[in-house]
Image (cartoon, rainbow, N blue to C red; front, side, top):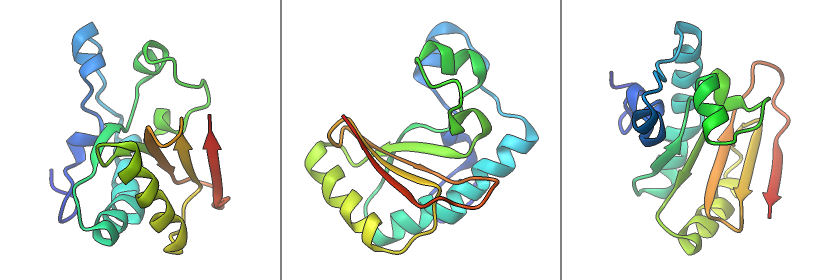
Length: 136
């Protein structure tokens, strides 16, 4: 189902790891509502800003998939409230991160994961913290 100009709902729960291990990663209706908000509130505005495709590494994760990928037990991915993406390499990811940081977008967290290997962006069901983090 197309949610925005550039994003389909289903691409936010497709997972090669889930497919490999036979994990059903289909989100609940509540998680699908959250994914829709991630798309409309942060991912499409980021896509519009950058003007290039974003490669979704990880969106929604069911509990068993989250364990398999060694995600945090409190990960927003479990609720459909976060997305990890890349533009293809660290140089482009770093440039994108800086543009996203400067655009004034409302988010809960914006994280540079492992020297710009990928970018994490998340929203929340509580007031947004506007946290900007760099994980090494």
